[in-house]
Length: 316
Picture (cartoon, rainbow, N blue to C red):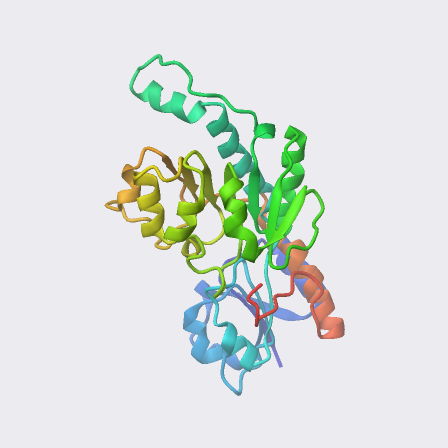
């Protein structure tokens, strides 16, 4: 009986060949599903489509494992995965270098006055540079001490900073000068010059950054979000920026994507908008397949996964 790996996107033949050398699965992409496709023979998916739910999450399904193409899994039907005992793995860590470089670029452009210089150039204005800052003089609060947070903290130590971390329980993490529990976020935000969100989206992190939170921040502070859009109450952030309750923000993720052209966020001078590309990674297929193929080998021989396994109940 033929068994299938169903993928939302195509992969190069070299990777499909490597997968077949590990296990005799047939590889099918979403755009090439035949009309007589045997959905009951799909055991693994790479990525997920809502259109598959009534075909793969049913009692007679053979689905055993979903490999997410992203690190975040909040848009997936986690409760149904749990009900049908489906394993879930993600790409946590794959984007760590790219997102770290994105964040360093924002921090340096802000502290060195480059963002202001770009605006002045557009207006053909030779203006004095605003106050220049060194990263080492800033208290940088990184909310989320997973693989991305750790990579960022490690890189920031090159600039002699002492990054502060926030995680679930305040456990110590390498490269962070101090770490605190999520319940301490508001107090730590009062002292921070820069707050960077890298948290996954869960019930606890939805609209974590709301009106009350932004009121705790310094009026000169910077807020950056490369985590998940719905972690931020967009209306609250807009108010905080437009009323100068905080100094500056940079957003790569939004509650609504693409961000509508008529959205008021576009008109703010103290906001940098990037179109959810901080995680774009050169050679993505190669990096992704290193995770998938190692898990495929373990799944085939042991019936379990060994890399980036998601706790479906916690959502990360």
